Structure formats: C-alpha cells, structure tokens
Image (cartoon, rainbow, N blue to C red):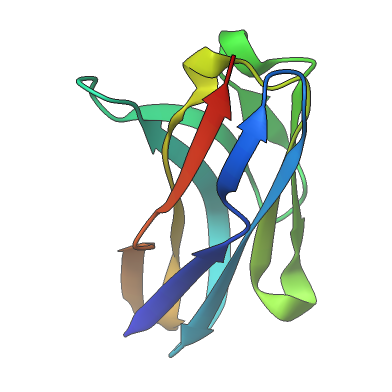
Length: 120
C-alpha cells in the first residue's frame, strides 16, 4: 500500500505564494507519474499539473506561468510552487501518484488533500 501525505496549504492573500509538498511512502517499487488536482467549492475535481519520472510536465491552462510542478525521485516527493495566487485558486489540493508497488503490481494512490484559500 502506498500512502501520500500533503503539506503546505493555508491562507494567503491574492498575489501571494504557497508551496505544496506531497511525500509518498510504503511499498514503492517505482513511481511513474505524479500530479496535483484541486476541487473548489461547488466544483468538480480538476487536474492542475502533472510530472513524469523523467521530468516532463503539463499544466492546466489557467495556472500556466504561475504554478510550477517538480519532483524529487530520491525522496518520492512532488512539489507545487504556486505564485501570483488568485481567489479562484481556492480549493482543496490533492496529490496523486501512479506506479508499481512490485514489478508486477500497479498502484494509483491519492493524498488526503490540503486546503488552499486565497483571499481578495
């Protein structure tokens, strides 16, 4: 079983910055893709950013140029640097990791989520 624990959420004023972290632990053989998702009030969960093991990234259009996803493969950790935050970025942010628990067993795990609130 693979566990993901997020940290770094909080309350920030518009224009401010936050850095989220998500550490994976447990039975991990390898992690392929890691990503950040968010769910705002009354909204469906949406993809924010993803990163492959090799470092290829993709972003939701609304966060391009403001958010940066990165990962430390040695620490099984993914980060999300969020700059120029806007009130519409307010949401619960969750991380996801996909990979192998053993050479023949796949996993697709989620963290519990961390609240990000941006005040205007």
